[in-house]
Image (cartoon, rainbow, N blue to C red; front, side, top):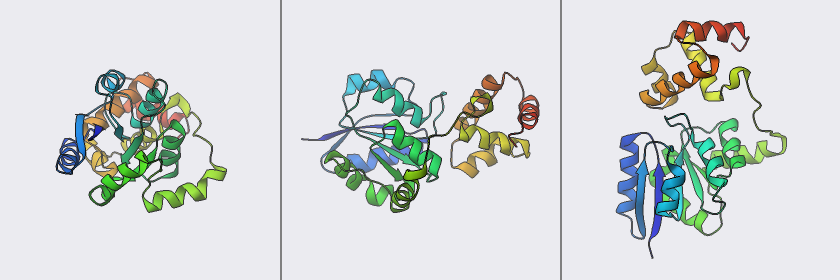
Length: 212
């Protein structure tokens, strides 16, 4: 029996690479692959995957961690493995608290993806080695991130900090290993939360708030 996989990843080339890897690996079938999670609930209920592969940074106003929270509101069982370039404490532990079943860095995909899928399907919690060390070292003292002024996420604060330093959109995308569309989506969300209409207004409010 084949394992049905659902993929959420905004980077098209990486999404296609993961699809190709699983397609050519015996025992797997990719039920769907999507660049955002806006229709995740409908897609999950229609496609009924055995496992979900979830990126963290995606366009559309909902990131992977928030998507996991929403999925867990109606589906407690389907395993979700986070696929990401981020191995910082906030992203790792927020993903786990949200209900993620495993956490795999993208640089380990070609070597560990199918192994991680099998591990989570048999009740394990696959993690890249440095992520596992971080969890062990941090879990006893970690509390989920508190809301920041204007309810900006950690990633939105990083992007706003970069903008305040004069960094361009393309440079920000390269710095954080995200697509240009994802950068634009984050900036759109920043404008909405801060109730501004331009980069200059956003940066000015950012500095006035003392978040810099």
